[in-house]
Image 1 (cartoon, rainbow, N blue to C red):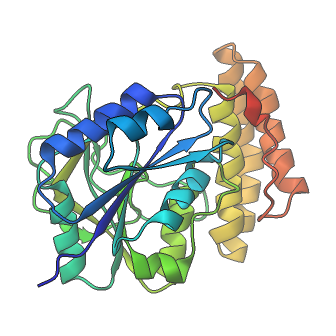
Image 2: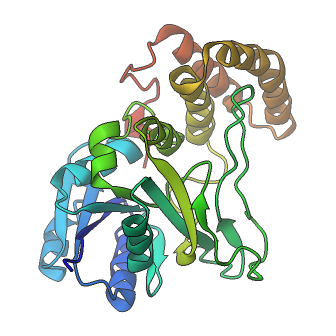
Length: 309
């Protein structure tokens, strides 16, 4: 039997040491023999690729002169990939033994599964869960729940290999044919919600999203973007609305617009004032304004990307 090839793809942005830790974890734990590793440097201030090429001769490195965001960086890697499966992982994750082959085995046994994520635990708190699945999206409020998040892992979710609402962007393996049918990730999100949008498009292409808790990866959450920032507030609000514009049925979409304007917006403003994050108020209105003015496929981000470091 021919072992299917897996393209492991990750994106680096100004975090060479974090990315190197990921590469070390893959080398230390990998037992799957047919892989290629692709690292996309997403416009880092200092180009690490020349040094990496000498240090890691078996890894494929791609340099983008511009920061293309999460989707754009990963799409570059996918375009260069030759695998039967694409395993997209955040550069702030670390592998565990058996991770890759466990996910491959599920995809091989279930041809309707187009995308799958492993169990994700917090690297700094290795007994705490981050993800063991998502509930379906409530298309009236654009809200759902990450199953297991912040719970102590006592084995309560062990042995789950089943459909889930969404796979997690920190670690998701995809069938090449599913990507061919659904298309690449939408790059106009830049940050947040792009993987959920991709999940929806993959499901519309006739595939299922699954989770397998017998596979495990650790995630160093919030390395890329701080817990609270103007960047996060802008893109979380902008892209929440954009996701609904691109995916929600007509009546539910309009219910959401009313809900967001009359309930979410006043609530957020009150919280911003309470926390003295007054500049976030402008970010919220810029996020709403972008969605009023721009078509849903617009590549204009409405945020000064040069300020992201």
